[in-house]
Amino acid sequence: MPRANRYSLQADITSRACPLCTFAQTSLLLQEPMREYRRCPNCALTFVPVAYHLSRRDENARYRMHQNRPDDLKYRAFLDRLVRHLVSILPPGATGLDYGSGPGPTLSVMLEEHGFVMRIYDPYFAPDKTVLNGNYDFITCTETVEHFAQPGREFAIFKRLLHNGGWLAVMTQILESDDIFDNWWYRNDPTHVCFFRPETMRWIATSFGWGMENPAPNITLFLREY
Image (cartoon, rainbow, N blue to C red; front, side):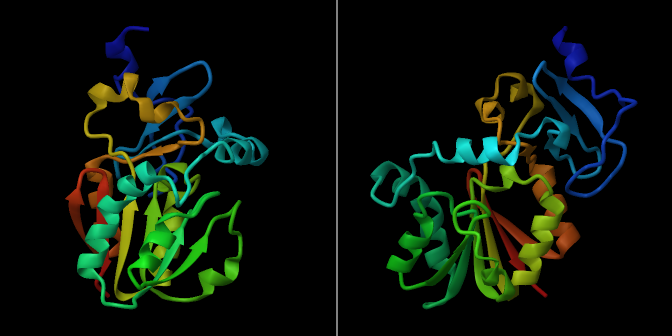
């Protein structure tokens, strides 16, 4: 199929609602044999419809292939870009939740090394939902939002969990331009089902009444101001 047609964003008769903002009239961005990608004109989210998502069993198996560990210096260096920013804005001893901690929690360990009190949650590897009953000074969500089947619901959870004046720290690869989407490595992971444009992040901030800043590439900090 010619590239121009693949990116035409023409409305599709099987249009599916956006999982972030629930806007109904989404458009086909890219069709492939194994799955399709849709674009929301309201919040600019690019997403894979649920019909193309992996089963929970296959998703779990894929996550167990991840090799991230607290003793992996390369991984710690990757996360340290965020840690340094959090250390600069959070009060000593602040309480945080690492949401989507994965099979080898590392960010929480690094933040504890700086004196923060951390809890972790992951639907597969740390599924204790009692941690979702509390309130936190900050929440970290690193390389996780792209896995959300229902991102609108997850961001609503974040707002409920955060104290007023609390921070939500998100790390995910940002889709800066549709021109790169066809060959973008980030969409090739079958567990990646949501892709965020800069406009999407601004939509989230506006819709939830949050402040927003981007201290580094692919890092977005949201401030719950009320």
